[in-house]
Structures are given as C-alpha cells and as structure tokens.
Amino acid sequence: MLRPLVTEKGVHRATRNNQYAFQIHRDATKLDVRAAVESLFDVKVTAVRTQTRKGKFRRFRNKMGRTSDWKKAIVQLHEDHRIDFF
Image (tube, rainbow, N blue to C red):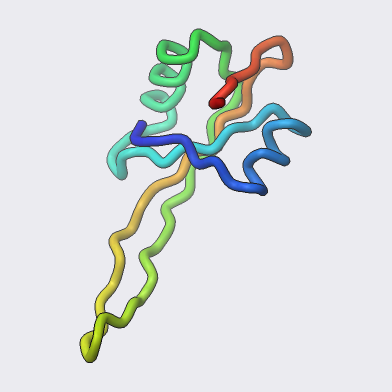
C-alpha cells in the first residue's frame, strides 16, 4: 500500500458505505491489500476491489509525455470498524 486517497468522493464513500480508497503497488493482489490494511489499521476487511488506472497524456513545453499507470484499491470494512485519517 502506498498511500490513502482522500478525495471528496472517497470521504462520501467512507461515511455512507464504510469504504476507503488506497493507491497500491501495481503488483499487489487483493489478498496483499487485505493483509496490509488489517495489520496497519487493526480493522476487519469484508471486501477488496481493485482498479488499474491508466496514465494521462501531459504536455511539457513542446513535448508530449505520459504519466505512469497506477493501481487503486477500494476496501470495504466490517460495519463495526472505522479508519480515521485525520
């Protein structure tokens, strides 16, 4: 796990559905994510969903470049558990 993704949509998802988003390593599996979240935050994970996000094209001066691809995990916790990022 690289970092938590704290966005407006993520905060809404955390309050309503008890789901949290993380940027993870591209080679990480759902089992790796589950084990990491449960050990780091001492919570019970019920479901893990992953997405591979494609990088965007960016222009720097006169050259076109591309940002790197990254992987995102949405982790749903048991209803008794919460993660407080702040």
